[in-house]
Image (cartoon, rainbow, N blue to C red):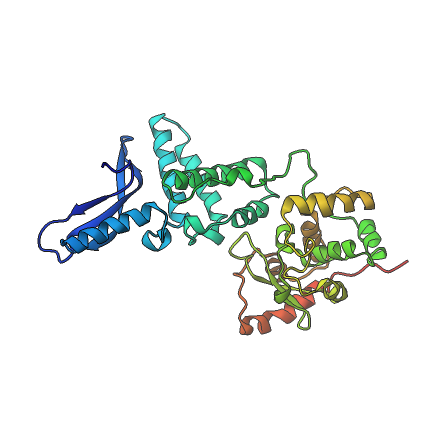
Length: 361
């Protein structure tokens, strides 16, 4: 009886081999410059040309098609490799259409790919919904064009994976991709009066969290992912950050006046500021925390304004420019070794403490 399409085959590789019987399976196709699809195969086992070898080869092929030990049999490509393959295919398609924007589009997609560094080396079938939502949240303060380019790259990459049967389905449609609207007042720092009001209400847990954001300069997506194990309260610093090479896992000092707030939020949960024990998604953070708080305070700000406020306060306090860059993650690589911590931590703490706290009424 004939095997179904894409079932795989057993082929004899010829004489001169100890195990000439090879089991190969179809793993997709490669697009040539003239837009022809060339089948691609993966060899999953080799056997002797004996009755026992033939029987073992048939059994392996059957087990593969039944889904047994698939991951052990065939290793999937990494996200980075597949994303680059999608970009190359996209360039070919644009080329056949004589598009004038090939180089521009390619540059934009490669820039989007750089935002996915956290999953570069993961096999495509090991990349989870949470991995991708994490990346989507990290760019939510960017404009629509940049975010949509990232979404297109993600969708194309995972659809390519689905068509090659590396994954059962493309879940990108379930990811929340948020972006800053043009009519939003982006990067509007909190005023002196607003900051004073926050300190007057600082017994409130939600406002404690807001003040921590202002006096650390973490991006909102970074703040909601701070793990309690990375909060070094006695030494007055937090390890955290993402998005850029310089910003990832950087050292952020804790202002002396918000030490009690950080200590208040610390718990046995994984994350410092969490949503009933779970990590916030950016959309839930806005809907469940930020928007109600702004309404209660009668203020009109975006979550990213806390970071801009920190930068503004440090600048007004004449803090060392290099320290400002280190705190905000705009300069040196984020490193966590003890020598580096001891060397700069005092300088960073001194810089953040230059920001004066409003006097209570």
